[in-house]
Image 1 (cartoon, rainbow, N blue to C red):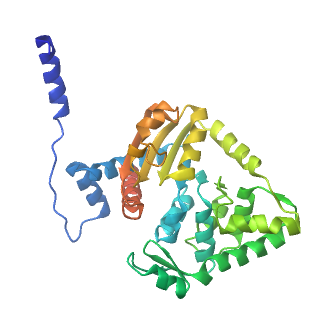
Image 2 (image 1 turned 60 degrees about the vertical axis):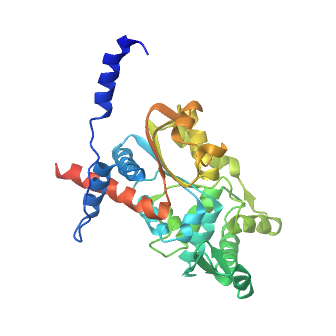
Image 3 (image 1 turned 120 degrees about the vertical axis):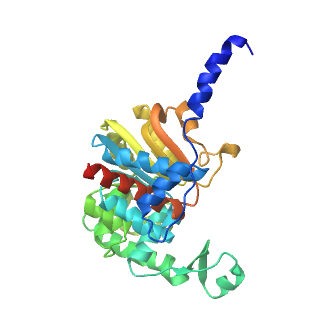
Length: 330
């Protein structure tokens, strides 16, 4: 090291050591807003990331010129988080939803009165097969409440829609599906009410999509995949700024950041994931890697929160709403 570098390094040290890690107590009357603020001051591994994610989500939500994408995987819709995802749509966060066919399946099943049940990771799956109960992690789904229920709903929907016209895009079909669901926690219903398009690039990878395939030879139904991509493309190209809350990985994450590259990347990005980057997967890739692909702007505000979304997404959303309330009180 050159001795001449020492003053510069001392300045860097002073800059690095400016924020102290603070301890906190949890109190019985502590508000969520107080807890999020405590996590920010405590810093501590992912705790600080939750606070930062809330700040970025708040900025994204408050930016009236930003087009906001809500991207998530279908497994989450089997849990109580389904209601929060619907709430984000109803409260105006999402201009676009990008998700998987699993989302559609779970939302239809639960939205049409077919409940899921609390289970356990350690249950005997051979026993569950005999008694006709599916296990999704620690969520239990009776056989009749999943495939059969989704298939019946979808067939009835398609029987009705092909009488009006033969060719439909997936987002149009999902808009019509949302009209048929009377459940305040339904994602499809929320999207239909707010006229937010749901794009499912892997539409055939699930019960709903399979019924489109089975229905087509008998009814003449045609599924126009390209028109949805054009609709999504137009919304991306028309945006002034672009932000995304991306929960999980896979095709829903990739489709979101893939289209973002055509606007030189996202201006805001919050990732919530359990996937790690060390296998080179898209699901585990961090925001900094997306910069190299032109999918997030170097100047963009981004954070990744490594966690189970069923725990941390409610905290992140609550933190953003606390910041909103605070800004309105000024």
